[in-house]
Length: 155
Image 1 (cartoon, helix red, strand yellow):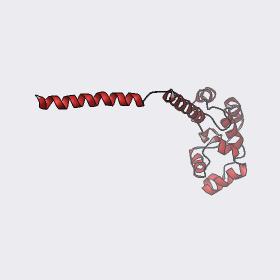
Image 2: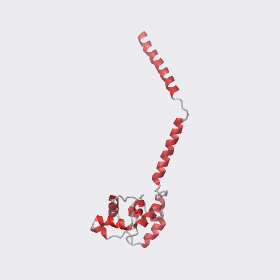
Image 3: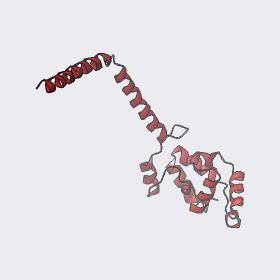
Image 4: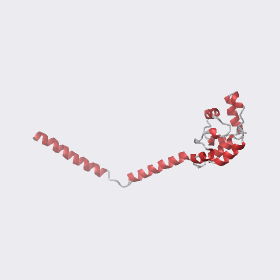
């Protein structure tokens, strides 16, 4: 019986001392709550910045769908009249993978990208592509749609 009593008492005393020691070291002076609040604020800011373009305009998929009548993916270059999946792929290979980057390209640079793609791509005229991309980047869906109604293949 003594053999069992000693380990039980030592275990009980160790548990009580461990509890008291842990409790005394973890007194919360509000720093944990403050750190959690900062973390939540950072997560919220990051989520918000992921949805915003550099100009601070949030991409609104429902507004784009209301105008175009179909789902529009953020930074989908095929929304630009005259750009199809193959041309989008070509531009992606040249590092132009957002509306903002396409808007920053000159028509001449767009033509160089097309020329590098081969004979099939040289036929396209990218004259309006940067302006269309700028409208998409800024979320000016109705203005973009109305202009595209007048365009023929990006011209």
